[in-house]
Image (cartoon, rainbow, N blue to C red; front, side, top):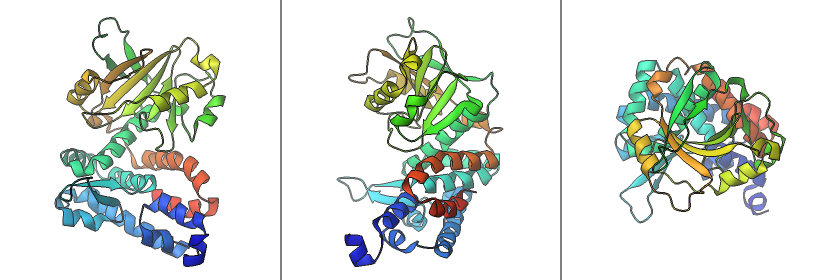
Length: 323
């Protein structure tokens, strides 16, 4: 009611702009029709391309602030001299991953390694790494797998674990309620949350004898509170859960990080979930990572959620930025 009285806008208009374009008061109240959306989308695409192609020019904070259409810069709590640089929204992250995909393999690898050295852009790196892994799930040859190493002290007693490719059986879900209809046809299958409300896993894989929560990360330290995974697990039909062992796997981009994650001590980690880690070199996935596949993944990943958050006509206009 307050929005309507002061700004003449419906609350859902402000909410959808916030969800798609990030926490900018100006954008939340001005992107109201297609010409405005089209202009802003074009500007965001230009910024994303500039960042991926000329990333070394954004080494100073005042230079990073020029990327405000893409990133949100905030001071770290308790410090005015240190900041965090986060992608403004999942929609913007999709535009960034499209710009990254448009680069040559050499430029992509150079960009990935450069921002890997800059803690400001950890959220960008994490999203791009996750995109690599999701494309692997969907497009890698069916015989491939990700070998996983168990955490001590159970390394000797633990069984060998391999994360399989799922190809067409990788799908997205919006909430736990949708999982009640999951079946065991077409295994292995990979289920990926379309929202960021599942902070301790980015996908889970169902095989003939296991349910594997996959947490994709580029950090050497990570939380593993598995409350939400347990809720997801409980939402699955009983016949899907039956006789399948539970695993939690940290998947990261170097063996050094994987070793650090599996050796970390986690308090209150459930005894019925085996913890593993694995590393994947993104340079080995170059044949899988194409612009067309990234576009399709982005549209699949976000459309399920945005159709809940936005009216269909508005989403059809905004999704143009992904393709």
